[in-house]
Image 1 (cartoon, rainbow, N blue to C red):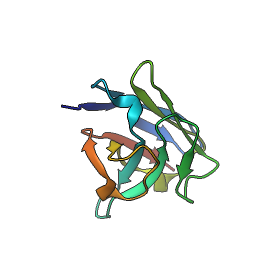
Image 2 (cartoon, rainbow, N blue to C red):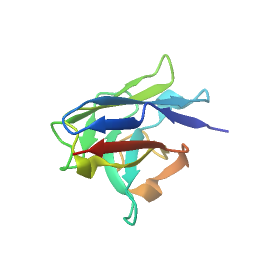
Image 3 (tube, rainbow, N blue to C red):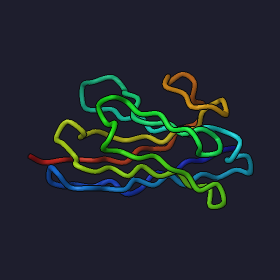
Image 4 (cartoon, one colour):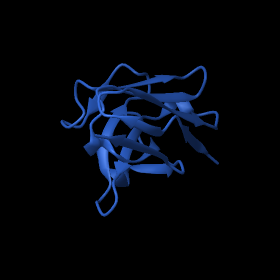
Length: 124
């Protein structure tokens, strides 16, 4: 069984930075791609970023490209999302997910395990 636990969310002002962390259990962590999605109130979930199994390839939504950086530490079973120059429209619950595949995935239904989410609120 795989468990994912996110942390690092909070309330910040526009322009600030936050780093989200996702701790994963399971011996096969390094075999799979990982991703971050977010969901704002009243909106559908949105792809944010993904990283392949080795960390060599990363993928971003256009809305966060250049501001967010996804990374992973396979030795520690950790995935990170460094968020910079935050905007009020980044406000959402952020979810860490494990892909079914070793390559990066943009689609929610290509992930089979999810964390409980961490709230990020950006005030203007």
